[in-house]
Image (tube, rainbow, N blue to C red):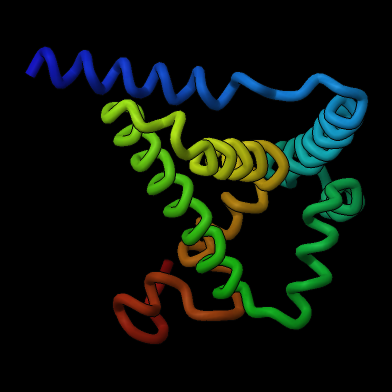
Length: 165
């Protein structure tokens, strides 16, 4: 058991080390980082101006326009039901977890240098899901539990129509 735990810890460390290494430091990547930080900051502004924290509904509606991802999603939501966004968010999370397991297995077998694409995919997924799409992804993952949706909630799906939240 101790050898398995040491192997697992070593694999997780090597995975996190591999993801953070090799990032380019040219002008384009710095501009991209600045743009990403700006989008993330505007998402934080949107999240902290929620009605739950004492802001008015008008303030919340105005702050939502600062979040570029939320503006794009709101426009797409006019044509695409929320259920499809929920499925997409679940697929993104499952793919990221599966890719992590694949990389850990490759590290344990010392095959990580033969195929670098899983590391690049994981770096991209983590960078987008955890930073740029965090609040939107969480919103979509919690969609079935949201009692304010127009569609079917998880309670209605499990217990039939008219079920309370």
